[in-house]
Figure 1 (cartoon, rainbow, N blue to C red):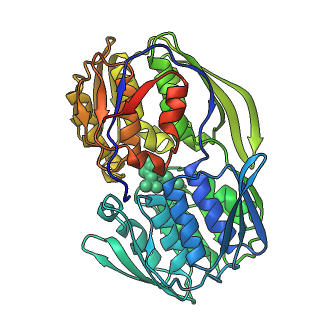
Figure 2: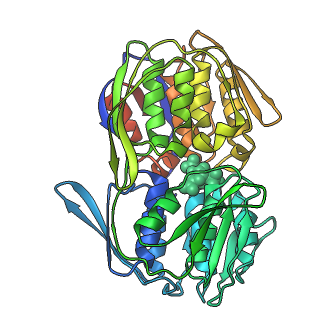
Length: 449
Ligand SMILES: O=C(O)C1=C[C@@H](OP(=O)(O)O)[C@@H](O)[C@H](O)C1
Ligand SMILES: C=C(OP(=O)(O)O)C(=O)O
């Protein structure tokens, strides 16, 4: 990020109304580019998220020798890739800078691990703080070597292997990124790579690998824990991918519509993969008026239009086993809880400490600064909603974290006094156009001069 920081402020105004589409799913977009770069023949991707994180992955795929092109069409931008074939990635000349993108960096390490090449990965200040040993340790078992900074942090140099040994690995944390890094490494590995996943996480990699022609089987560990077995060295064949709207982005206008009095709004074409719908289930339990219409399947993923109508929300207990299905939605759920009546306890949020920022601590600090009663107990976040609008009147330091930035701007739409964020540039990593879409719905969000 080279542009100067961009302070934004949100204030209470009138109702929100209208119908919008949010940008494409970030998880699916990264994966479409990576598999397109490995496939033989042409891959065409529509609806790709053109956010900073995904553009970094596109640049990395080019640096590894794939052809990646963008064209404007009457239906919107179309991305076309011509891949190198499994095992065919070329050694990059330059350092691969993955910006703010944890998914991009970790999945890329999986790809690189089983190619005979040398590469160096880095990222922005946020990504350089995040733990990478969770992928480098299991990827080392394929035969790759990783050298990085203390604590397994970026920059990291990767020496991949062309003679990888298949791995069977049981995930110690619920992480779709770690699972996916291993599956991608397993692609250029003779034999079967098995990942055991005691807690299910988003399965976009599995769906897309199948779509490109790989063979995956459901398996179980000795104790019955579920897993996935990937047959190595398939021929991946270029495919058409339609990327649905990102439910993690839709979360911000949807919660805003529920909280701002008299609002009613629709977000069209939202991906409803069952491993991504934890927020919708939680909001429904809180009493939200939420309707899914026009349900369909697009590009192998369930999709619907979602309409919310403002109404009172009540505090609830959110179980820990729901966390993987809504892991990126806790900052905005905490804002919904702040606008609800009663206590919401969100359990099992340890993973939030290692996202773009410490989202557990940062959400609690930001809410407290806005006059909301909030506590952290172990890995649980507890928000005491009074049923009255929060006081607001604070400037929140978002630490290069897009979701924190958007969540606190939504809080500003209902608070008694405006809420500002110190820097909104990171919003572009996942939701370019967020401010314009929200103001188009009637929200008052502007730059702080
Ligand atoms: O696989 C993915 O695309 C993602 C997995 C999640 O991370 P973890 O695997 O670290 O839980 C999520 O937070 C991230 O935004 C996207
Ligand atoms: C955690 C996130 O992304 P990543 O890990 O890819 O940086 C996110 O988008 O909220």
